Image 1 (cartoon, rainbow, N blue to C red):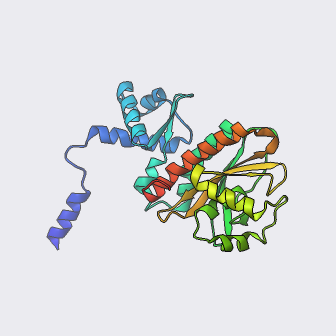
Image 2 (image 1 turned 60 degrees about the vertical axis):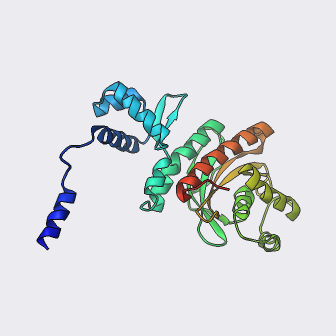
Image 3 (image 1 turned 120 degrees about the horizontal axis):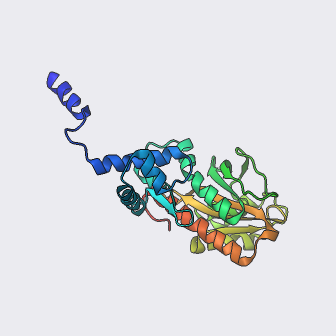
Length: 267
């Protein structure tokens, strides 16, 4: 019993020699996690009392490993989604939502859209769990906690694409949905099939007239959609190129998030 206790004490004791580079790298991660906004290398090095060259190399390594992201436009660093791969077993939902917030904010800022994160909360519903507003004076307003039918709008097409529903089962599911400008089932189903090919879906005024939504799915290890990120704006602000660029960015971001969650690339 005493020997076991001694071994436990030894395992909890600090090592005789700490690995300096690892300690510094972890201090950088902790600093970025606590900063709340992207930070430049000079400020990080100064506040952590690190050599500027050493700090820069640590950040480059962390970016390469996917634990930190670098914004070339502002020359700043922020926590990356790769941390989810290391911690997903211990992350609670609220922590995971906070981890995704930089993605929502980046999309909202670049494309001037309201960006929303939806989570499947039951077989028939999704819930809005986080959002980032655009800085535009006029924007689409949504509220956290809002619930929608799981197969409605662009996010619904994404959920349907990564479900095990047959065509007939899906037809029945959407037959009772309320749209302002409902697509035919044939149109809806064709768009569902497109999701797996291009990675995103578009609702151009079907759910709400005059509003366009672009969505991409987040899938789990069983290749089922559990979340979706949706970008929402007034239809007049989009052209075909803007929609494609927005959809491709959503696809790339949700693909990385899905990989972090499941350990493999979304198919």
